[in-house]
Length: 190
Picture 1 (cartoon, rainbow, N blue to C red):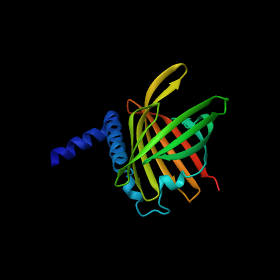
Picture 2: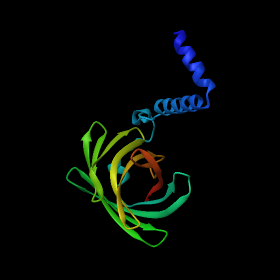
Picture 3: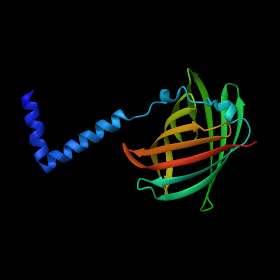
């Protein structure tokens, strides 16, 4: 044990050692601080995707780079319908620069609070887990940027605030490096 203490003390004396210890401490802190969807199981109101998206929903959002600078703002109109056991969400995006985009999600319940989802620009299937007022989605989106298309990993967290309002916070990553975040505020009509 005393040998471990001596190595620790020696590392603390060098600038590189202090940097490595700070990095290790940071990694340990973030690995311990990761939220889990189960953490929200007692939160109310409980998110019911079918109920929330029944009828028109509007959303407003922004994309921020990793420094926090807002690069894009947008509005989304969402219409929904049920086809068998699937919830179909038709999203119409309007960006501040006048461009438009459409995305159609097909969401299928997978039991025990789990959902699967597909969309034309999603690689494979999105995987979602709902608990209490929260839903976490993970998926890879083919994102067009300046004439190129990139596969970007999304980690979406949706939180039902009240029966009309939901907030969505997404982290976008490529090769494990955060590119930025998307924040959306949903409001159910009526």
